[in-house]
Image 1: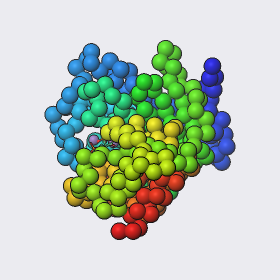
Image 2: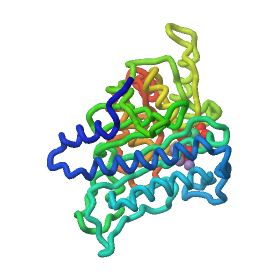
Image 3: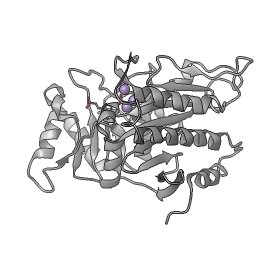
Image 4: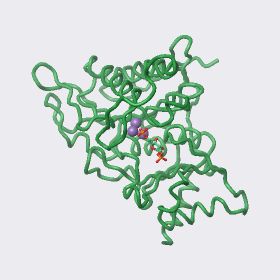
Length: 332
Ligand code: AHG
Ligand code: MN
Ligand code: MN
Ligand code: MN
């Protein structure tokens, strides 16, 4: 039986931070609370009127699902009502949200960027979905309202990042820059326990995850890599697994070894995934788990973002497999 709870783990870790005030623990606590509420709603989604479209589109032109909206509101409420962050960037909101006190300022240290519900297209068919989050320290002075530059920091400035996977079991996978740890929710008592300490990518794997429906539109190097995966030679052909939820595909690859690709295509010139709340947190987890994350030529974590909802081609996973893709891309 696993006995160390997420709360105990966070308190232990925060003691190691210099000048720790407990603010960071409280922030993770609020994320945990929101995750449990969303988990509960997802579990009974077919029973209450929460499946299907909400009727609006988000800033990126995607149809919002009711659960996209519910998860977004739940996470925002958990963070804002506790006055625990100074600002939030969400996939579902066009602009960042400053959290201000009565004086118009904010004394908090941290900003949060999030994909409240990842893999929305899976909701209506009872397939696993996730939440992704990324935490930065603000750049603007404490006490002032946050501004856009606080949200346009590169991934290498992240203090912590993680995801919740609402799967056959619900897990939170977290990094605070000191390795990656996984916590499984015991739904009977609503407590996350450390179940997967020190998660690392196998050096290589035999699974590749890419939407092959777009094959025709991919760059030459990616097409060649996919052909390489399919060729009979050594441990190949590899197995193809694509759930259509970054969190779920990543989680499987992290545990079993594998590679995830969402490259640019003629349809999506910059790929589809968003840098600040999809690629960066997943890239931070990847590197902390000894994997590699690239846009094809650059380390994801070193990319300076220009836009809040900027998209980026994204390749991540077992280090040897990512290096192989880089090799193919280098040839073209
Ligand atoms: P979201 O549901 O947060 O908008 O993210 C969907 C993303 C990602 O989770 C997934 O890997 C990818 O979109 C799937 O896209 P395709 O359907 O184009 O393959
Ligand atoms: Mn979306
Ligand atoms: Mn997503
Ligand atoms: Mn989403």
